Amino acid sequence: MSLQLGQIAPDFEQESTEGLIHFHAWLGKSWGLLFSHPKNFTPVCTTELAEVARLKPEWEKRNVKTLGLSVDPLESHAEWAKDIAETQGHALNFPLLADADKRVATLYDMIHPDSDPTVTVRAVFLIDPTKRIRLILIYPPAAGRNFAEIVRAIDSVQTGDRAKVATPVNWQPGEPVIISPALTNQQAKEHFPQGWRELKPYLRMVDLPD
Image (cartoon, rainbow, N blue to C red; front, top):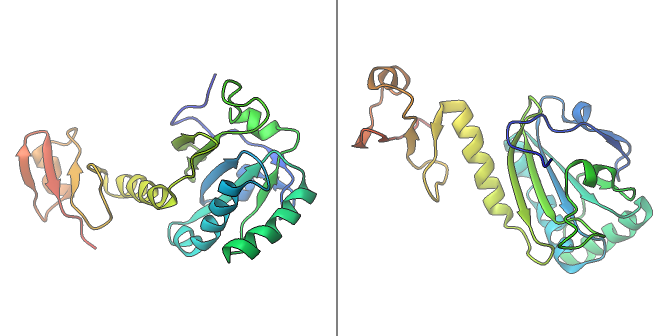
């Protein structure tokens, strides 16, 4: 059975470019972004890993730890890291799991046999500090991920948790959000004393304070 939103993310121990990772302990009280790569020394993965490294300040702002995975051995990761730094201008600054035995890939259902039985798809799991899975994205091996969208999605999830709201289509931080239909107007007044715009009884837009 595949993993679903709200479930506890499976714990594991696996070697990485920064030593043995005991996943839940490594996460601590941080959010986690676990993402897989089909294979070392491939062009799309090379660009993605560099982008994750470049975005380190953004992950830190959001209390997110990033953890990559590839089903290749540790020695191969070390050689590939040199290529990433040389061609992309950003060296790895986060651990990359060496999942050669595919234990973690199997645990997280990252191998889709009808796509390719030998490598992982481009899976993304956002995990909150309680170790629950909050977001799952699956891309095919040939499609590079949009990490700007992943950052935006993290902002949406974290804003929803913090303010008890939902975010509308194409939402960006600082834009109006949606008051939950579960809140009555009286309850909404307590949560949002700044007031809101009611487009429909079920669609109430509110600006959050900075």
